[in-house]
Amino acid sequence: MEKKWNLQDIKPAERRRPARSTAQKVSEMERTVDENPAPRRAAPESQNKRRTNKKGLIAGTLVLLVVAVAVFSFAAATGQTTVTVFPRWREPTVNAVFEANSQLSESNLVYEVLTLEAEGEREVTATGQEEVEEQATGEITIYKKTSGEERLIKNTRFESPDGKIFRITESAVVPGGTSENPGSVVAQVFADEAGPEYNLAANTQFKVPGFKESDLTELYDSIYAVNQSDFTGGHRGPKFTIDDAELQAATESLRTELREALQGRVSNERPAGFILYDSSITFTYQALPGEDIGNNKVLLKEKAILRAPMFKNEDFAAFIAAATIPGYENESVKIADPSALTFEYAADTNFSGSETFSFKLLGRPQVIWTYDQEQLKRDLAGGSQTVLNTVLGGYPAIEKANATIKPFWKSSFPDNPEEIEIIEELTAE
View 1: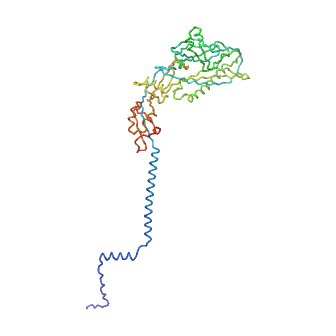
View 2: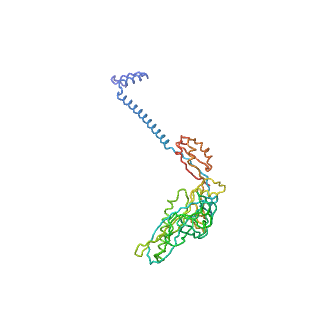
View 3: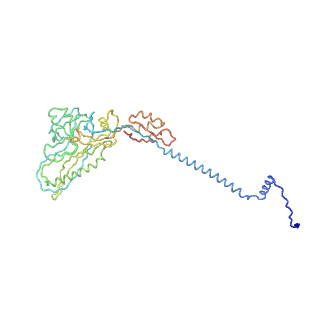
């Protein structure tokens, strides 16, 4: 059977819309935009944001510029010019006996004397009294103002201005000299008679009466003596007696105290520019008049005198260099550390302060050639960095040198020599 269709069951076919062209689509999109415009407040916010970003960029750039200027200014202000100098140096082995003299000599090392004094006292018990006569004793420095040495025999007389006679305990040889720089030697003396009137004050001048009596006018006028410290010990009359054991103990204790006190002063009272070895220090002692303090008590008094030879740094270094370094030609040198050498007196040497004495040195000191650092700075000031090698040609004491100039963009030394720092380093041997 054929199926019958109801007209109501049949939907009419929909009409197809014609396809839109691309131009139509774009036109509709534009129409949609026009019909739904974006809120107008978005435009000012975008502009403000752009303005803010621009201001931040400008501010950041300014900050960077300020920081850069500050950094460069600081570098320029704190820039430092350093010249590292490598001077000539040697390290010789020293093991020999040498001679030193208080007078200038071509072959001997010249020395000066550091002299320090201190007095002290100890309380001791007196065991009684006795009548004694004692002669004053002391020390004189004998001078000669003309050339040629003069030997004085033991017991040679020296006369004070008031006629008191003292005699030297041992023979002495007085070296020649000049009026400006007389030769000198130290000698021990004792009074010709006992008594306190011979306890003379320091700086008394003496002459040799024997020269005058023998019509040796030239010697009488050219030789004289001065006591650098008081003469003491002259006594006539009662004197306290002290038990030997107590006296010895008190004397040793007092001398130890005086030695330690004097040694403690050496480092502060040694002149600048001098070398002094502790092992060269010598001590002498003088008994001073005691004092009765009652109740059988007596003050024992003594004076201690410290003496030590001192050598000028440059003279000492040049002497060592001439004796130990082949080819050394009297250039200016220094010893980096004098303690690298040990000092000891030669056998039978009794140093008293005004004569030739022998000593032994042992060690390996660093002998360094020296130069004028301030002149080197002046020679470099204001010159280009390349001038260094040219300037060094005038400094044979320098083997080589390096310059570091800061800040890095500078290529010349500062105009002010004080802004140049010199650092010394030693090259390996």
